Length: 102
Length: 102
Length: 102
Image (tube, rainbow over the protein chains, first blue to last red):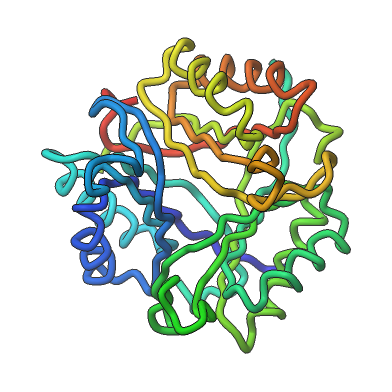
């Protein structure tokens, strides 16, 4: 079985930043992404849950599988976007079967 | 702390394909799997959200931790199942404490 | 781009164990965690879904990004906590940009 190495970027951000982050991911060249909604979390920003007033404290996780250069750009954009707000980002190695999809 | 290397297969598919994928994962020998429902996403298939008509555009992510041979079979099955429909699949390395559970 | 290696611990447990697991993760020194609710799953414990009676069979996934020593402690605590109940845990490698956040 031949596989191709890719990078998985995972970004956890408050809902208020999600749309900008998704647009940035596309603009930087990712062919797709997935959003996991309704996360609870706790971190240096305090506790966040979907029961926040008007849902403003809700978090989402955005996942994108890309090549290494695009992943690096997305990771840096996530760092910049979350510098003032809520968010963390990290990258890891994955293998895919269909190179052309990512 | 002794750990054992395993593979994590992650498959994102439209809801219509999820049940067949879950049955395939079990048939191929995985001892368990987890389903993350209600995902939003965007990719080569266009945009998908839980607000799609009758929910048909909703995606799920299915995660299974297995040995390398089972993971390869699941990955190939996911490729075949999503050839005509919506889906991506990828595999990565994880370490577990309880070898006998996977 | 300079990145820093961290460990990602992922723990899937029944809802009844989630709060104790979250408290343990914080007590062991993690600076944050994220909870993915409403998971379905199947494993050595039988089938679990959010449609279980009173939701008692619902699972969650708790994710924490930490250094290697904290990750090892969390993994062992997860093993102990789930010895009698429902749960699996595994660890993998990730890279982050902001070392001081984890």
